[in-house]
Every structure is written in C-alpha cells, then in structure tokens.
Amino acid sequence: MTRFKDVLIVGAGSFGSSTVKRLYELGIRVTVVDKNKRRLEEIKDWAVDVLVVDVINKEALEEITRRNFDAAIIAVGSVFSTILLLTVYLRDLGIPFIVGRAANKLQGEILKRIGCNKVIMPEEIVGKDLAESLVLGEAKELELDEKHSIIEFLAVPGWWGKKVG
Image: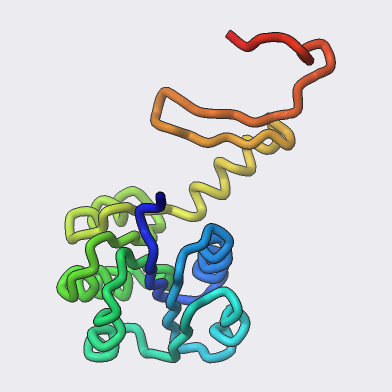
C-alpha cells in the first residue's frame, strides 16, 4: 500500500516532469502547477490535472490545496527564495509532507528547518548515479539506509544456480 495517493507538484520543468511521469507509472494521482502553459501541455497526459498558476501567489495555492493532497513536491528551478517561500506557504496551507529541492547541503538544512520533510539534491543524485553506472554497468542500486543496499545486476555464468550468502 502506498503512502501517498494524491500529490501536488509545483513546477513542470525537467525535474518536475520526470517526477510526474514516474508517479503516474506508480499509480499516484498527480496535480501539477506551473506558470508555463507549454510545459504543462507536454505532461498533461500523466497528470490528473494541470493548472497554469503563478506559484508564488499564495491565494492561488490556497485554492488548489483545498483538494487535500497527501504530499507536495517543490520542483521549481534554482531560485532558492522561491523554494523557501513555497515551503512556508505549503506548510501553512496544511500539506502534511513536503519535498524540497536544494542545490547544496546548506540549502537542504534550511529547508528542513522551515518545514520540508524530505530534501533532495538532483545534481548530487545524478552524479552518484553516473558514478555507479560507470562502475557497476547496468546494475541498479536501491539504498535502504547508510549501511544497506539492494543491488540488481546480471550475474556472470559461473554464479548461475549458486546460493547467495
């Protein structure tokens, strides 16, 4: 059973769009807001609703958040003051789980202090994924915590039929 059923994504750029598509594949209902109508048009098939909104307009966000979202993902660009403002707005509007986007650890710490439940740093994630793909090839890693991971990879023929552990 999934933890989230209805998610609001604020921002339909590359990061927001790829998040919308993956959440759709996972069966999550997503509403996306952005001021750029063209971006919204490109992802409308993966969202329950797309709304052209100036995302720093608190009254507009208030109207949208009456839909009782389980979570919100702040996927706007690199202007940190906008991300800060959105975090405060969404927290004030009662969104129970907020994901914020940070460019570095200091920004991440600030976002956590003002109400983000989870902070992601896309550039750090991409760099880590690139390094792992160079070392692990087509293997996929799911990090469970700092000490444990599950890695999926193609086994060499000599390992076929053998027990692990």
